Image (cartoon, rainbow, N blue to C red; front, side, top):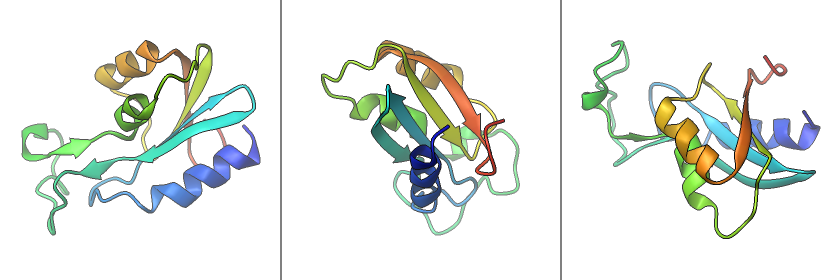
Length: 116
């Protein structure tokens, strides 16, 4: 992983509006960063109803960083691109599908201390 990706994820993750988990995703193609996005609570709320709860996703109106990355893609061809995900240990199936649709072939989990 290049320092640019690490720096981009570190800089963006703090911008997340989610009160439970800050997550950032970066799509890299070749040696170029294509997009970096964070998860968000939509609309932002002052109190997280899921903060101390596992599951109960119906209480949450979150938009995943991976999903935002995929949807922010324009006509860019990222076939064979790599998505780097920080702040979570996995990407959900829906986000994996959306990333595959835009050509991402691999998802790497980053702990901001290095690649896991």
